Length: 323
Image 1 (cartoon, rainbow, N blue to C red):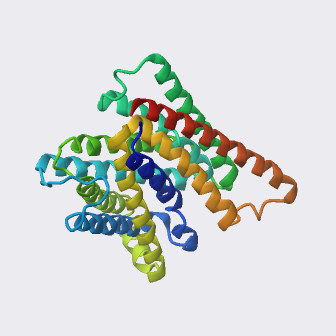
Image 2: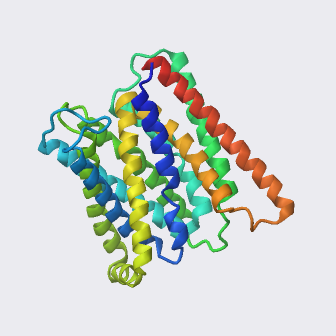
């Protein structure tokens, strides 16, 4: 039976990841590429605090004795650089083709996560074909839900700078986002290596990669965009990073317990539902849609959430069978 820690970690990760974009709604004039740097600072702050606290009190999913193996540190820093590369490509895709065209493609990360766990972490090697079929069905249902909700909640941008380049950038980002957890989870096979330390060094890699890739892309413009932003916007971006850091920590707890192949799609399903709830109930994102079209959009959103929930239930059921 799946542990209470894994259940709690999955739910927490879904809530944190589903809430990470809320701060950005309050500083939409903050260039997303510069916003990303402050967000990464928030990630590093959150992960540093959690790792320090883990030395004082026993936190959920922690280890009794800790060490600092250099290979594990290197793996997690490398994972952060991989993530920041994915973030760079997704920002490039949004710049070229807009959010509404980018995120349905980025949702394919579910597929990469699923196969990355099997190929690189040797997960699900001893399960029968029926279980694999259920997992594929669950992941596919979540993928359909991702596509429907993305299409319903994203506004169509009229300006498209580079269709082919945007699609290529989005697809490349999927592979980076789908693979960065692999070195982290590999490092966590060491009994004295804590999930809190792993995510902390991942955050350092993310900050390092974000600074290198960001300045390589925009050079001096990046510094100008970041420096001219209001202090309030930086604080909001940092709070978004804190949410992401908490989400990544709890997600890795869940992945250690039930594997990347199951946990990643399961968290994605919850992430979709939480994001839709925030958008509809708190921010009333459909209020600017003409009344004659609103019912159709709500129906698409509801259908997308249903697919996401059904997929999550299937993944959860399989996790219960296996763990």
